[in-house]
Length: 334
Image 1 (cartoon, rainbow, N blue to C red):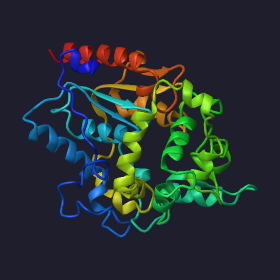
Image 2 (image 1 turned 90 degrees about the horizontal axis):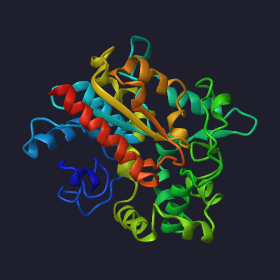
Image 3 (image 1 turned 120 degrees about the vertical axis):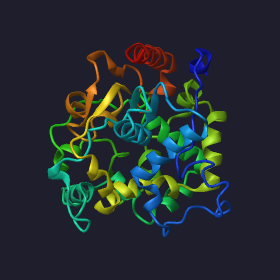
Image 4 (image 1 turned 60 degrees about the vertical axis):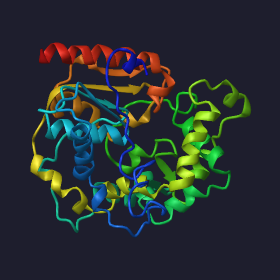
């Protein structure tokens, strides 16, 4: 609403697999099944969805494309591929480390980077697993859709544990992409090998007093998320993780952009208490130095007092930075 009140047309679509995206399809009465084809969830296909939506709404340019978490990656790829369409891009909470490099290209039958890391995590003295590999398993949707504590309490605990309200989020850069270095991450990222996600976050659920003090996610808003996921299940969203973790063949069509940089002005915003900034060591620095041609020092923003949900935890600060950046993009392109 603040962006709209500033005179901009704001569009906030559900991405493929989430919310209402299947409502008009022939499978509208069914939840996404694990056995369905993963091809529609490929990054290039999801980026095409965004670009098609722009034209379907009757526009031929966009002031700024903004994406949070997985949406950050979508926004980055849209900006990488169509600098003629988007004047600026804002990536939130998940840094974009850049287009594929020659060294990252492998055979479709090779194990992914995440699969190799997950195997190493399982060999630690206290065996662990990577959450993206867990989310790619056939049992993850059932765990998330039928949590022992109930859907509302599970999602409350999940949002709490990834926010600045949870005192365990003492964030700092990690040294390397190794099992040992990443094992310090909280259990919503690096999980005990025998635990489900509802069990991991349930152990750190907020107290009734903490829930009562929460101002950024009231129960009536949380209930909207709960109702949507109760209706759709989680598999549509989980399929995006599978495309990154399950097989290189789902990302090989991005190889054509090898070495290409994001040329338009770029901004990154995250909470200072968000481990997502550093969960892939080196990604934030690569984004700032090589992946983006136009990311100024002042446009890499870490908001104190916010975790992963920075746009909800500190909305006024986020809006202030967004408006500053959008106006700068207008000046650059005028």
